[in-house]
Image (cartoon, rainbow, N blue to C red; front, side):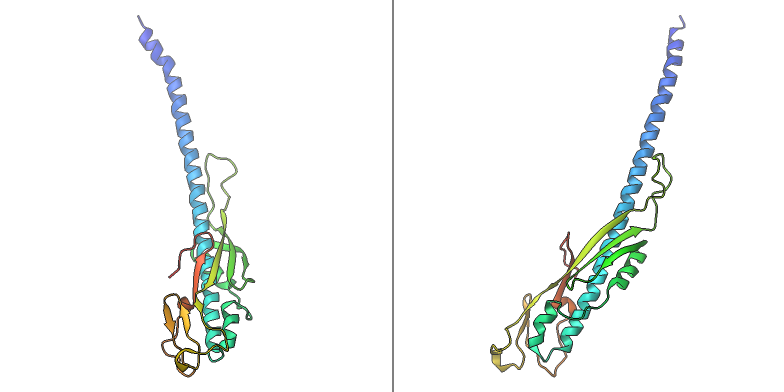
Length: 203
């Protein structure tokens, strides 16, 4: 008549085994989650670094355009990035650091796009999954600088006798004066900046 007690005693080790297995799975999922968070952090840092570097290039090109404002024949080269390029990777370093990462590689040699490779400072940490504690996630990102403006080619008559051709950027048209630097387009009016794999306007 002691069968229920004996059955309970036999079931207890099975119960312990099942609970231990579930606990192990929970810890393994936690480790996977930590790795996913680390990868997401690396992508955020890479995106921020690439965008910051591209915005630095955009601002530089806008300054170069202002320098040749009186010579429309030079405008096309500016919008195509055909100038001596500025170094932008320091800006990428700064933004990666602010997002708890470090730049492993930065390519700013193309005039209208910047590519960065960022690794997180944080590691996955101790877990039940072997050999992952010291893993640092890394991700790539490319930001693109897209010219937004069009204008008549040099030699075409300027509208209304304006000394400079009208500059059309999106839905807005600027009638520029060589000696009037007020009300000029801003860098973000001249160029768009967005991530290559997610072309969302940064403005």
